[in-house]
Length: 261
Image (cartoon, rainbow, N blue to C red; front, side):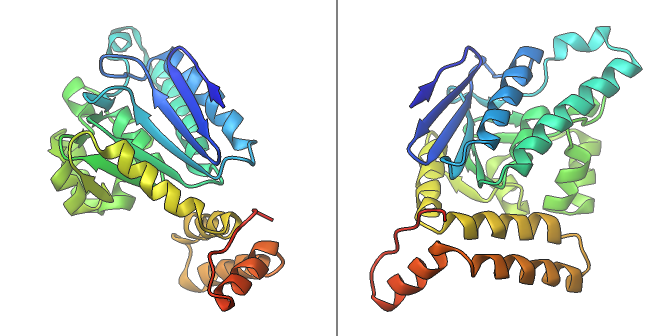
């Protein structure tokens, strides 16, 4: 099944969806791209047949090079606030998807592109990728969640260093500081992301979904409250057919066939 769009392409391969930002040569997040991205994400949020999502950019030059800078000279304070809130809303929708979301970073991921990658659950980057929040070089600051998600991923000091300096880092450094989770050769980001997704797709989808919920909702809670949430969600898995299938398959020494029930 395939749904082609002008700027955002969505391909569905059984349980796996691959979303490609297709706005060459560097896939900037124009208003039209953001509108199509939001529409596609809204559609995915109600598609129970998709168990994993990969987000990537067309070509090998850029994942997403950032926002559309051409619009900046015309923007005033209220325009900027609305622009930031819209981008945050879209990226929050990506982060809130029940399925695991993997970013396949195949080139530049700067500004809004880095923020898009950080809204995903896992980031796979090719060795030629460059990441950063260079907004201060343009007289602005990150507006699509960068000041909030980056410290949560790499720590307060490193996030401030990157945002205050506006410096771009290579994929190896991004991997070293924890901004990237897997580092692969040039041209292999999407392939590696697909391999990872295929592993996840063999696992019990309800258990994966509830694990994501426990992590996302519990990580900034006090430990005891996070563990209470974990216990509640763990209990929910006990009422699933997949739990019975998983346990039976283990005892019978065979691969489990999960149905998401």
